[in-house]
Image (cartoon, rainbow, N blue to C red):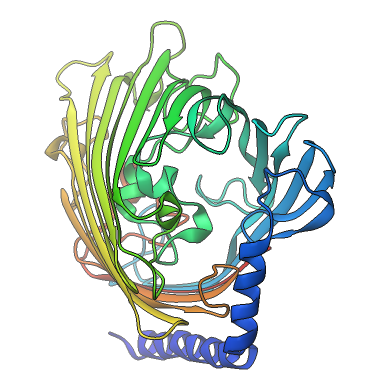
Length: 449
């Protein structure tokens, strides 16, 4: 590693150390933190009719007419420092001697509006980002709509059957569907999630919730089809997604984030989902390369979580099958991903975590006869290791949190940029088109209100 790389790496570590010191200065004493938690536990839920205004740790500030009309306003801000070190420049035409990329960014500035309309069983949510890098940074600085849905629960209290309509997350990968962006473990979700996620889409969902079982089935416009008219070229003719989860022990609320607080009860769940979409008959097909376009996409997954007293583990396996139309001699693709992560608390404020990922791409992805053409030097098998820590300014709360982690990409990760198979704008990974061993340092300060 060059002297410049070493200096920059230590500079990033110094920033992390200063943030930890800052955490010590702002940390609340235990008595006050306990008082905050007790106060939050005694507050009414957002979906309970409460007159006037107030604040709920889960839903932010809320207004009520004293009846069933409620409005909650909340938000999230994430601020990051990133430093990527490689042996050569990232893929995409950057000069090969540009082996270091550093800088600050604000990847998320989220505003959230949610509540109920004239009936505690009829709820809604509208939210979006001013700084979302999920599409290569092209929307940076503009407001991008994420959720815009209405929901009716037939029994209320979060149990029984419900129907949901509008724009929402595809009920596919639990890491994306079951966990908010600010409730994750590391600075960002896994690379496996970024490759296989269904993202936001538009459609109609029907679901059922009980104490031990949850199910969601959805008819939609296909994976990652948000903010689009019905005849958009990248939408599928139709998409079908279904997810089911079974809880062995604990409360469902324990799986709303990726962590497991100290002194919490044991909790365990297992889940699975599939997504199928067909393209090209009624809507224009999505072009991948030349006249080649996707005709059918099938994604399936199984995942599970176990949470103990101050420690937890999570694992997920994902498979993807892609069929093409309009080109001869191009093989269908079968890609796979595996992610395993764990966490442990050293104190009520300090949490350590680690994550291992494997992505096995079809050999046709990088071959000359594949849909993307030859990608020189690219690896079909990609492995990543992430390790880091979280500091919670308020114990058992994501409201103010500092996260620092280091990602090591074992393989040549340039395939992600060259083929579009591994989105990396939000993760910070740059990709090295010629060599193995990219190192990525990420430091993040998060505020949720």
